[in-house]
Every structure is written in C-alpha cells, then in structure tokens.
Image (cartoon, rainbow, N blue to C red; front, side, top):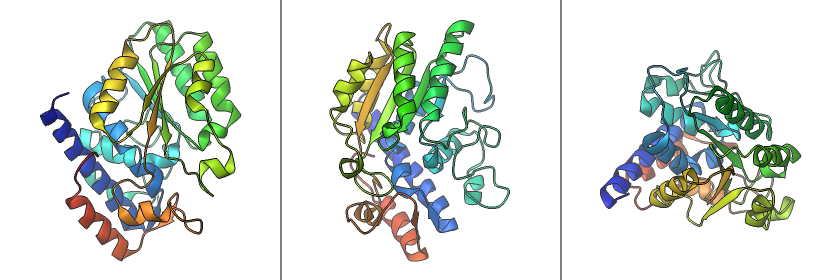
Length: 284
C-alpha cells in the first residue's frame, strides 16, 4: 500500500467514525468505545479485500463478515452505508423504534449483515460454520470475523478455535479487537488473556500480531499475509484504543469510575465529537 492509498483509507476511517458518532449522538447513548476501536479494520476489509456486491447483498460465493462482538454494530452500519448497501440517511434511525439498524447486528433486518450477533462467543462459532460451508460448496468465499478481547473470556470462543484448526479452515481470518477494556474494568483486572499470541498458536492458528491496530497499512499487510497461509485459520491481533478518535470517549475508558463501553452522549459531546473528527489526523 502506498502513501496515497493509506491517506485515502484514513479519510474513509474519519468519515466512518463521524457517521458512527453522529448516529449514536442522535439517540444519545450507544456502544461508542468498541465501535470506534474497530473502524480501521472494517474499512481495510471492505475497501481492500472483501469480494462483495452492495447491489446484491446475498450473492452466492461472496466473502462473508461476522461481527461476533455484535454490539459494535454502529461502526459496521456506517461502513455498509458508505459502501452503498443502504442510504446513509438510515443511520439516523439507529436504535429507534422499528429500526432496521438495531444495537446488535441482525441479518434479517440490515442489508449487508451476514450473521446475527449479540450473545458473545457465538459469532466466531457461526463464522467457523460458514467457512466450512463455503469449503463444501467450493464457492471460493473467504470468511472474516471480529471478536472482542472481553469476549475472548468465553469458553465458546476456544471451542470454535479448536474446531477451526482441526478442520484446517485456511480461508477463515479472525481479528481480535484487543483494546484492553471490557464492560466493567480493564481486561487485566477481570480475567487476563495473556499470553494471547501463544494461546492462539497453541490452538493451531496462524497468528499475526499488529502493535498498532489503527494503522491501515499494517492491517492491510496482515490480511495479505494471512491469505497466504495454508491449512491453518488465521488470527490477527489488533492492539487498539477503545473510543479511538474521540477524546471524551477515550478518557472515559481511562478511569476506574467511568466506562466508554455503552455510554451516554450528551448533545454537547455529540457536537464535540463531530468537531474533533473534522480535524482528525494520523492513523484512523
């Protein structure tokens, strides 16, 4: 990826974060932190790697994406709207009565959503099943999935990991959004995941560690590398910042008395977030 391509992707990331915060700000509450932390990975996937057709969301043989940490749906919705799956004006209905954009992703409501998610741990299991199905059909599809670090404390994640390795699902690429925080406190205080790289390798996965999970070039290089792996599924560990791009969201996750997981957003904070994102620079 050259510097111009990286610059273009970073601009898309800025727009996606803006759309995400605008949608959450309108309703006044939402999963801010974990939505903003995965924006860069979603943008690189949908704009560089995934074989999809927004005009035909159910096209056979398309690549699939499963957001196992389904509460981060606002970020996925913003990416899908940007790709043309539905009009961006629909984002204003996030979490509203009879919306097609619920807090957690629903494949029966939202064009472009490939799997319903919400109960943590189930999404990666579904992704494993989808990848196995694609192999049986021989349709050439790759399956991508994002899981959370707090979610990784679920036993079902490791059951899915064990089976994916057993079946040698090398067209399955999973990302861990390793932002270090979960609902109640930092990961290290609740139940440490370390050594996470060693754990995934021990389960038979190809593991790629990305120190800056907001560096679009590094994310792209990791995906390219994962695609070359044979007879093993790949895990890409993304070290991210929960609430990336919005100062008050990042700050809320840095104290023991506040949280940026599912947080209230006042009208003043809504305006502040949009203003900050206008001038966002650097990665993401």
